[in-house]
Image (tube, rainbow, N blue to C red; front, side, top):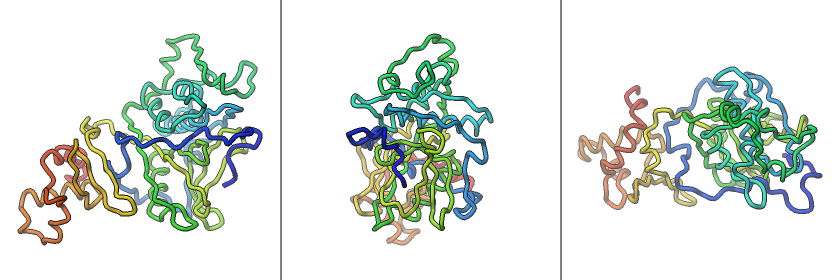
Length: 340
């Protein structure tokens, strides 16, 4: 992909407005939550773009500022507004960025997601992302919050408290191709089911709105923040990976216990473990509903009704998953499990 940041805005030092964020065990990762691919998602050959279905978004220009994380998230939330309500609202990138910027400029994608969920993003007319004369913003300007009417500002905030931000852990590079086939399929589903996602690439953050084939290669479409004509495409032959893929997932009735556990992976292996408080258990299947079903089989009927090989899959250091683990998994898996 061609560098998404125009040369004039890279200055004398390396542009890095979207540094890769540090790991945080509290993050929800796709695989921690029930996720079912939609068989109706258009194929790569057919392609899909949220802008084609819901309407094109206005292109913005971040000027000499390092506000790309705010730009990317404001565009994503604008699209979610279109999807959920059919209404376009011009949202303020400055409102996001001015609350999350790092000392040296730029921001982490995770922090932008937190603002979108709560307290929300205000409309552009209540906190403009452009100078008074309409010219492109500077870094200093994007950090200053001057709100003339607090009531109108607060009322205009678009909150998504029913949503949680979820990360996708992409696979390690494999030769010239940096994404596995199964990850490409997950990316296709995220764009189709969740309105796209926000991610980083070469120190720059953009919103991904669509996918398709370009010259026979799987390609995703980034909405860029340097005005009309600055959008970018990323295909499966690109040598540099994008990172910190994050999207918003509807989890209105999710119990608080989801914050009690996290999934860890063994480096260079497919093995996964679930951490509940400080106890660690091996996960034989990332599909939560199947894990729940099979553990219930073991707990209810014992190892004598299934093969020893299958039984051993569910042990970690000789310990069966505890009731504490079941208490966490059950409310998450119940609906899918009972409808199977």
